[in-house]
Amino acid sequence: MDRLCCFSSSHSQYGGHSSGSGKGRNNDGIIKYGFSLVKGKANHPMEDYHVAKFVQIQGHELGLFAIYDGHLGDNVPAYLQKHLFSNILKEEEFWVDPNRSISKAYERTDQAILSHSSDLGRGGSTAVTAILLNGRRLLVANVGDSRAVLSRAGQAVQMSIDHEPNNERGSIENKGGFVSNMPGDVPRVNGQLAVSRAFGDKSLKSHLRSDPDIQDVYVDNSTDVLILASDGLWKVMENQEVVNMARRTKDPLKAAKQLTAEALKRDSKDDISCVVVRLRG
Image (cartoon, rainbow, N blue to C red):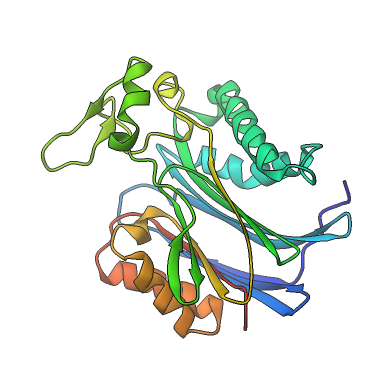
C-alpha cells in the first residue's frame, strides 16, 4: 500500500471546540468538506472524535470521513480515530470487496480494543464511517447511533441505521442480556448503554454487537451533500432540516458550524460533532 498523503486541510481548536476544512478532487471538479465539534454540557472531557481527509492510495483518491462518539471516557474513540481506517485499508481484498473488508476491519478493531482494555479502560464508542472512492462510490458503515445522511435531489436519505436497544432486543436477550425501559429514560442494554452495538464496552460485550451495517451507493449528479454527525445533533434536529441547512450554505465549514450552533441553540446536552461534505458545487 502506498503511503497515505493528505490533500489541503486546515484545523483550529479552542475551549473544547474544533473546526476545519479541506478538499479533494474528482472528474467533475473539487469536493470540499468542513467539520465542527463542540463539547457538550456534561461534566466530562470531550468524548467525540472525527476524521475528515483525502488520501491517495495506489492511484485512487479516497475521501475518509468519520464521527466516533465515546462513552465512559475518550480512549476508545481516540483509538478508532487512529486505527479504524488504516485497518480497513490494510485488508488485502479492499479493492475487490470493500464491504467485506469494512466488516472484517470493524470486528478486528473491536477485538483489538477489548484486548487492550487494561490500557483503554472500560468505555466504548459508536462509529459512523464514510469512504468516498474516486468521488464516485460511497461506502457508509456504522455501529451505534451516530448517523450519516445523504442529500439526493434535495431529499434526505439516511445512510446508516440507529442501533437502539429496543430494535435489537431479540439479539440482546438471546445472549442473556436485557433491555430496560425506565420511565423518563431511554432504553438501555442491561440498564446501562443506550445503544445495542458499539466498540469496546468489555463488561457488556457478551450482550452487544460490533458488526456494522453497510450502505454502498454510487454518487451521481443528484447527490450533492453528505452529513455525518453524532447523536448530539440528531437528538434535536430532523434529517431533512439538517440537509436543508447544509445545502443552503455553499461553504461546508460554515454549514458544519451552523449545524452545531443550531443544536446548541436547541439545548442539546451531548457533545455535538458534524462533518459536511459537499459533493457538488
